[in-house]
Image (cartoon, rainbow over all chains, first blue to last red; front, side, top):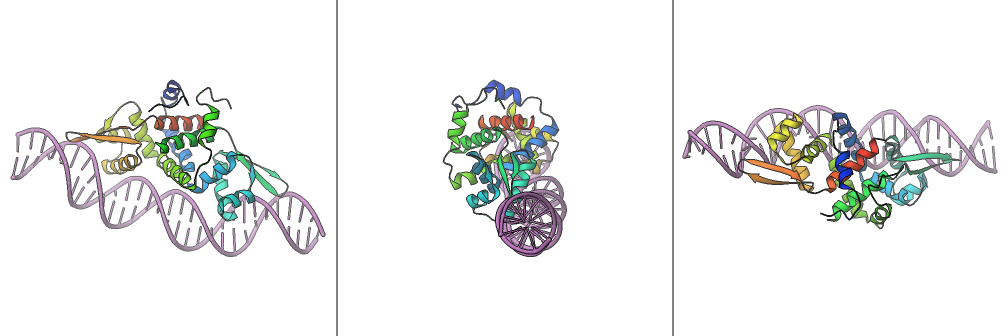
Length: 111
Length: 111
DNA sequence: TATTCATATGAATACTTTATCATATATTCA
DNA sequence: TGAATATATGATAAAGTATTCATATGAATA
């Protein structure tokens, strides 16, 4: 299974050495966030740029309350960031790890 | 947020383009698998080599039934592979994506 | 300031998931 | 073949989760 140069195997191995019980729990918590269609859709909606809540609702075709509940979970996990601009609250990806994690997942399911 | 050369940003961007509704569901399903402490612990237990069920139970300090139930989920998701050797069934990681995905997760929570 | 628009949040419900218990299956060995 | 060991699995209870509805908060504007 060649990884097409996307990562460096040695660095990967180093990253997963000596992981504490607590870190394992944190990891599970993190992945749990990605493990929901609605939240994954929100993250994808933000891949190409920031969006406010109304726009996210339109993309997902879901009601505002459901979306806001999930936005809160993503915010709490620091996967997305938010700022208010007038009446609207604008959301964006917090950092590039989100993209990488999802890309790795996509690469896996493609096989 | 420099990624220390662990991945190539262009390839990441390419991977997450044009993702269908179905692929999003599959992705959520995949991450759901990682989103459980027991399963993450099993995967870590297998990082340094294959183990049979009894050994996995010892590492996790969990009862055999609970472990087997989670092994089945990991097997079904093709994250681990198994083979029988006498009375024992030996499990190992199915491929390197597992390591990569978890390493990315770890990198994220470290910040 | 009253109203409207945008977002957040609490409570309730329906749905999912995990661990446990009991038991079944598979393999080895006496 | 019968007992022992290793693993798998079905059913159930307990815990967790997502969506919906109703309502609250916050900001802009008439």
